[in-house]
Image (spheres, rainbow, N blue to C red):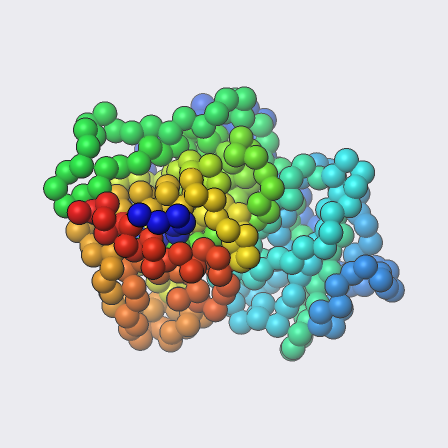
Length: 380
């Protein structure tokens, strides 16, 4: 066994589209979430000695009062990942009258593919916690400032599930290990984290069997309590659908710091649901995200154990060798590999193996070899 674990994505094949069940009106938040869009149009103040100096200042807002929000990101018109390659975004937020330090937002490299268009380019969403003010700086390292810059401020709304711990469930038929498979871990269903099913596309998309698992982190803050995980997930879901223009939340699964596994994209946890998590390689793969940022912070033990158990179960459904390699075909030249080319990946890989990103963070990425070994043990 090992002391730390990683995050995964499971592989898929040629997409087919099936109609999903009707949205469940009683599954949504009791108070709907909201998204506020703020245009970012230039330098609103000449200087701020505390602001980051990275790159040429393209946007520097004043300290703005806002309606309540908990998660934010910055977007621009061009959806091509190259458009954000020369951009650095920093934000700070106000909670209880106190301004946070400046925090960097990372350009998104998730999702996108021939079956799921992307409306805009932008950063990963960042969980700031309950806030009522924001200041934003956009710096340019090279090239031109992206056009139509906007800040997207998301409030997750309120749900009855926020007043009780998440309720992960196991299938009634599971009575332990099945030949060639690992036991399915307990998973919190979408309705039990308060997913508003009216937001997502009513159809589910599937591919063939899962051939690989890609590990991510959400690049959020690490200081939220596990009791807030449903709110964080609802905010990410809302950002992925309404801001990024995706059919649903991008990840197939998410795991919080307490080791709770959440169902991500709808369509059935035991099915090869086509996600939007790894540009160019969503087909033939599954994606799981560790909630938080693990560039230098060590992922907690319960999170690692849960990631290992989840990956073992998903790979075991299709008898994949967690210590082996798999050849996948790129569907997008915005990835590390030109469209139509093939590349050999570890069956359990990190997001950075397929896209130019820090994800899943160095501290988590370094645990992938241990995760592969642990998954192999779980699969017998």
